[in-house]
Length: 146
Image (cartoon, rainbow, N blue to C red; front, side, top):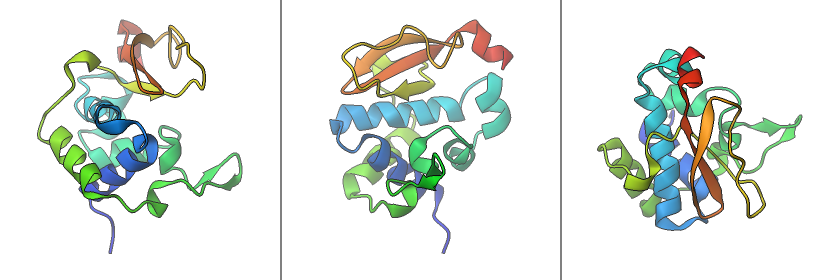
């Protein structure tokens, strides 16, 4: 039986941020939902308001890729077994809840260092905040031209 959007979302939350605590997981969930509801740019065009399309868009989330660098990716959403907390956070985000400090963040990444880049992925995103190991980025006006 195919995975529901809710289950794919819970699996992504677990895979991308399961070790980041509740706020870290909520922040990742917010990014997904910000992309789902983006008023323009790539995510509006590709995602068309769909959680599934946003999560499974190629090359967006490492955890949604079955291979990475030509090798099997053992840490992917298809190998996750989400707990109730992951479903609760997915439901929280789907219901329209957001972290106040996250703004319209469309991207996050773990720099594996104490410093976050000022722009990510290029000039389309600017640094907003750090939550746990992840740096979060809001879109610039250049993003809406993508």
